[in-house]
Length: 418
Image (cartoon, rainbow, N blue to C red; front, side, top):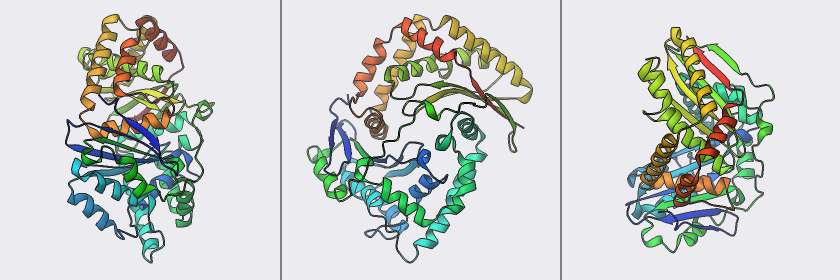
């Protein structure tokens, strides 16, 4: 299991968590910064900064050098920008642990913004980011969730890719440098390492101090996302005619209480398994197998500090929209009224726990989980083993009470149609 996780803090405020799994041959390193798109004063700043950090450091002056080093060790690497934070990660054979720490630390701590060519590269990277965002707009199953965010949230939480595209040209290099200096500080960072630690089992803190200890501590970003970020007047029934859509794309959402309410989070995870996501689940069996209205149907559970939403997502022929929505409501009403059966709850628990055990074989998945835990539950980290125990302790009565409360809220519907 992962109960051997060790948590600590460097002198400059960087929190770290690492765990050793000798049964696998990989290592994953993730550095997160508590600055994501929800904090942007101009939409797109966090995402653009994420890209810019790959443009070169004093030690590795060019993008090609950074990527060539990562390629030379056969690593899988990337970065991402979410609403609450930005992450930089690499996964490689365990013998390359220090190399991964070195390169990722160099990216987040030593970016050289002041070279002669940086201004040109900054302008070029804006174009690249816009192309990435346009690809999201073209992926309508992804884009409908962007539209849904806009319908549900206010402020930076509600900004989506179209806002980023509209504003990114107005972002200056001075804007980016100011954000970097304010937020890319020790007190806003978490380093998560998981896998076969090899010779570094007892030296991770020293390794992190070596490569990240020079980062200033700075001031922690204490802003959290609670119910005030829910729109007071969300657009609950939005149907948009969208260019490039062949089938009608449906996203039906219900607000949830976020990630900090750990028990409710896992109750929702169990519910959406047997209600929607499993091929033996209610919606798959009724909407697809019995009625043939869709090919696939799935759900997502977006959670932030103290808010989020549960969303059912699918697509269908335009002529089937009304029938699809009708049958979804029938199933949702039945779930609200009757809840789950004991057999369904047992199936959900078994499936969820089994999948968590499979995840332990993937060092990146565990590193990601550990960072989220430390981010949202800094004083009460819960290991995989403890989550499995928590899930197993959920009783049918409390589960069905939770389902009633969840589905008694007014839903928020977004449909993209040709």
